[in-house]
Image (cartoon, rainbow, N blue to C red; front, top):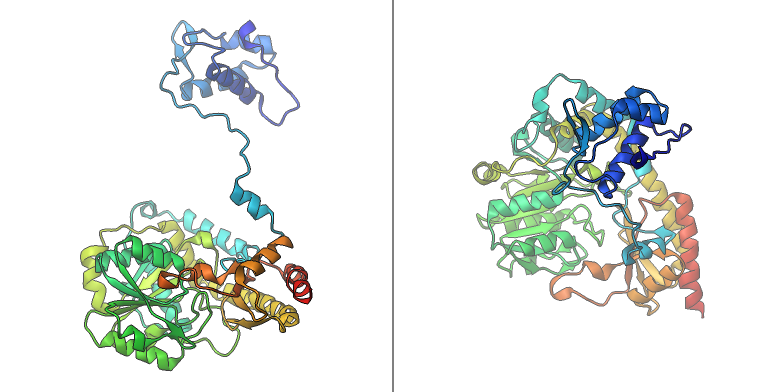
Length: 471
């Protein structure tokens, strides 16, 4: 029994059988108990350790099930040959990576991608999850419709009609795991080698995705109304990617006149389309919500993309696109070979979230939460008027500060970091020929900061920027 000098802790929260199992398993892995070594019988080990035989039986059964020992009739338990058996390496303490060290430098992070997860509707989500999983419907665990659950597509169509003036039948809607997947799907429909027009600065991931799929990207300059259609006309672009309700990252809202020009451009030739990314249209703080571009489309040229990631939580990973009817035949030919990338269970939960009125209540709550933070941030930033101006503050969950005192972007970011505050430079979102364009603008996202944290962070920014300005 010398090879099993196990010391059991009767006061530990770990069951005794598990302590025995872990000791023998570790001894086998470390070579203390070699191949073909016979273990003591359960009766003898139980007597030696002064525990019940059932306790030792449980430990041995677990070791047998995992392949560490084998039971040979009339002979006993023997250590198995571990050659070729996968072993988990002991986890070593991870070294601090530069990225992690950098993250820990900041006490406050004005991330433009932030979401207030403390307001996640936990109770409603738990209730709906339980209801869906209690349903006696085994088909939920099989592959469903490539376009997504019909119930969810009907719910999305009803919501879009009411909230965004989007005209869509459920057959036009495709559900996918995030906007990036839906853009990949669209690229598979159009085929590689397309020419796509984009603004700059823009959503960088979309730009990289289009380029990585061998598409040509034409950068079209913007003015106060958004993408300039007169310059778009001079390109050979077949597709224009825009965010008319709240351009990222500048926060511009495209007026109706420019929208009509863009639709006229698309309708002028048979193979032109507009991708409308409506990523955070739910949050608007001045005036009434502006209807989606798709609602004005009569030539069936607008492909609408929306998401629940910004309004509920990033981990939900559920987005959707509305295809114009003119593209449905092409989708059935090329797109339906790709299975839905969202769990059918999750789709049912979100459908219930929409149908039960939970989503509407959650949005109303989040509008109030973000509006309060938006107002606090604007009030606190009044002290900076002599060195910078604010823009893009009427919608979304971020705004821009442009320095007018000669300070550049890199200097502003460095000064903020020295005081424990992370801000983001606008220049990182410029693409194409505009990459590296000189900028004196930083982005402040406020969704993931409480009102108290915003005040504390801006106080630090005052020391970082205003004290420097007065030197």
